[in-house]
Length: 421
Ligand code: GLV
Image 1: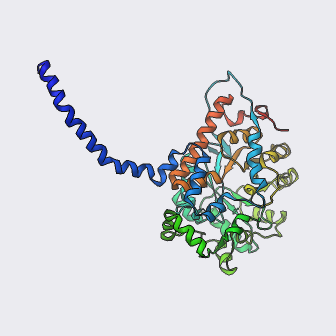
Image 2: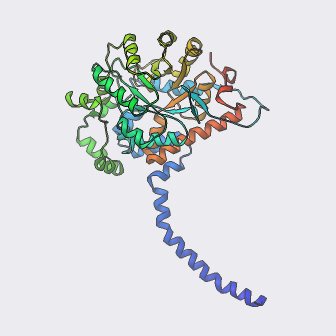
Image 3: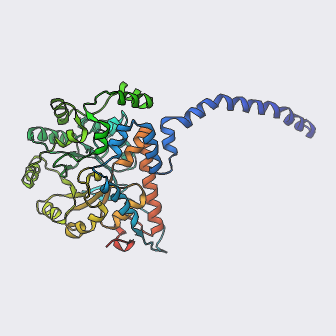
């Protein structure tokens, strides 16, 4: 073809090419718009956990968001969990190499990141996929998930639908036969550890839930109907695939007690008379490792160590139980000093950034448990949202480790932290 011919060919092709492109763009526009507005995609574009929380606040009816986001009393402890973490500085080490390996070992199991999916009650209220979506997100990141005995998904179902490493969290109620049967089911389904929550001697005073009249079983009121209409996506999901409680002890508790605030209903599953001798009884029922969740005093951690408990979670239940309990990052170092050589110490509460995890690791936590951040993600975009929350935290942690000059969690120590006593 001559030069002129080729030029003419290009000119002839140019206009049709523009038209073709405009047609293609137009045809794709609805899909693009749909994709940009779609449930998962907004969450996938969130740049941090705070943005996922904002999305969750828009997506969930007020009462459901408040159940997840809220805490006890004036929410002092919940706020301190975050503000005490933020008050700490990280002192970087320089010229120390750039490779970062986030993996660590918990109770003999290697996990890719020191961030464990915390047990959260009634996760199916947030999204019908509930624990399945969160566990899958955590498993996809190479870590382990802890199923709550107050969760929306059954023990066997979760093991089947998200077959990665799982632990089972239990509230020990007065009906020990029921406790035993749940423990047996968890063992048979392959759960690797039993996490016993010990900070629920009574239900915490969740004032937002009270204000919202958030009860179990749910009561339909003019206000809840109005909220439902304002959140049609959540309502359709909830009506089409309602998932509140799994087939556990709590169903019985909910059924015979009439409508009660959620925290009260969960609290009623806990035996207020629970004592250390019951922990010894649980050790007879469960031959695997036991972790106590909700420990804030070194003396309690020492007692756990004396009993041969494998780990403790320094936790104030996300500020949802005793308001004015210390923040977990403040309570962590004395507990590590007291028992760090004898059992594994984990921490939860206030984790919203990768740097929060780094600070907890440097102060002696073997891993952090994360609850609300994953639930914000779940609310914002189902599995994709929960996975986004996990990815954000993991990426932020990897970057923080690299910038802090720490190659792995085991390298971190208190020399990295300024501002802790
Ligand atoms: C359940 O564990 C809750 O704190 O609501």
